[in-house]
Every structure is written in structure tokens, then in C-alpha cells.
Amino acid sequence: MEQLLNAMAIFSIGLFVIVLFSVRRAHIRVEYSVSWLIAAATLFVLSRSSALLEWLSQRVGITYPPLALLLIASGVFLVVFYRFSIRISDLKDANIALAQRLAILEYQLHATHESKQTPSQG
Image (tube, rainbow, N blue to C red; front, side, top):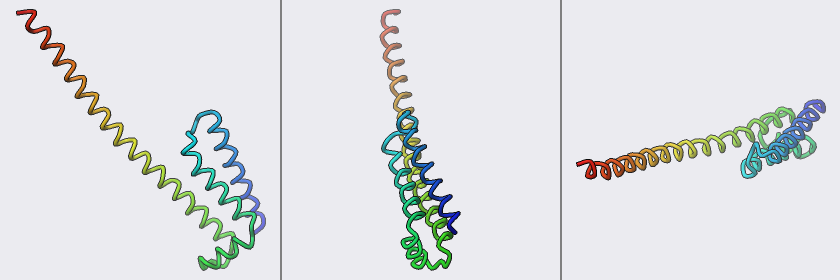
């Protein structure tokens, strides 16, 4: 049990460090890093607090606390992934709308350019 908890603590510290370095190098925006930092902190606290982990495992109905930790970790990451899926969907919709607006503007510019050239040629 202790080995799994130690491995989860090391994983959460590694995740925390990677996210901070990514923010520092501008690979990830600060508002998106908050979810990952909260997830890493949650995993670290749970892996270091045996009493809290045992209490949560009893509440969930799991007799083996490290299994509850893995279940909670999976749930935390599913929430983070779901949040980013929503954000990506919003960005895709905004990108499509922007491309459509650009196409309309190009069409209007082209039509205006042709209408100015047509009378001068005649």
C-alpha cells in the first residue's frame, strides 16, 4: 500500500513541476494550468493523508484505500479532460464562425472591387 501511495505522490509532484515549467515556457496558458495544478495537489494530499484516504474509501464503499485513490484520481482526470473537451468544442465552433465571417468579408470585398472596375471599363 505504501509503495502505491509513494508512487502517486511522486507522480503528482512530477505533474505539478511539468505544469509549472509549461506555464513558464508559455506552452500552456495559466487559466488552463489551474485545473492540472488542482488535480496534482488533490492527488498529493490524498496520497500523503492516510486518514483522509481511508475516510474517503469508506464513504465510497471500497475496502482497500489505494484502490479508492486510483478511483478518485481517475475521476479527477476525467473531470479535467471533460472541461478541456468543452473548451476545445467552443474553440472549434468559434473557429468555424470566424472562417465563415472571413469568407463573407472576402466575397464582399471582391464584389466591391468588381463593381468599381465595371463602370470605369464601360
